[in-house]
Length: 282
Ligand SMILES: Nc1ncnc2c1ncn2[C@@H]1O[C@H](COP(=O)(O)OP(=O)(O)O)[C@@H](O)[C@H]1O
Ligand SMILES: [Mg+2]
Image (tube, rainbow, N blue to C red; front, side, top):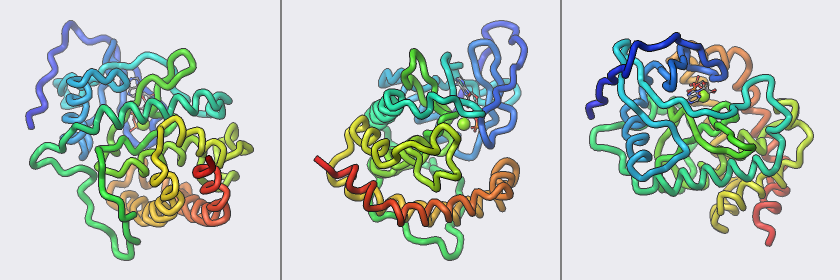
């Protein structure tokens, strides 16, 4: 895969740092573009963004090439990103439904995308010892899989675009819907939630996502099972990424992300019935 060199249309303007991400240092805005360091998953992401452009999917930045400094160049997507501290509107149910619809639209747009020959999705790590098994559902598409409030651009109060495709990988649809619930329902001990989401009705919000996404009945009844398995695996993979990549990943681990994952697992066991009932009720 050749990435293509980006030709500056004119003398580039000043570099404005873009805060809000957790792990990528040096994300900047330059005019109507964003420049980001090229990550290990870039061969997949660049092909994916080109596919989305080809099929006319409007809810993602365009990949424009690699600049003279070796950074990826993307279109800047105008709008509102939650940032920190989290705004009260992340609790809004209309916005939540719009996130579910956007992610469904993305999944439908990407469904025809085939991972190019020779491209290995992910960070290229072997599974660490003790890693529990994956959910037994085959991949259906290359999911975004990082649908955090920092990675969704809103316009007019609606989710309009996904950004930051670094975590994209082949998954089953149920895993993508789960990823949305993880951050937006959210799934986890309420004490760990962002303040606007501490007292929300989580099972109800899971249902809103499921309906907006249009989850199948089979996927709804698998959701809790997949959530528990993914949570168990997340502890191992976060630890490994922190050790092997350092930087923001190591910082997150030091700040207790592992303990938070353990609390999520315990909370999921307690809430399993309520979430399952909300998802599968007629
Ligand atoms: N293409 C884009 N259009 C608009 N804003 C962007 C774009 N890319 C990044 N940003 C802004 O910069 C922040 C950090 O960029 P992101 O690509 O998410 O990096 P990280 O890997 O650190 O999460 C985002 O949360 C968003 O606010
Ligand atoms: Mg991000």
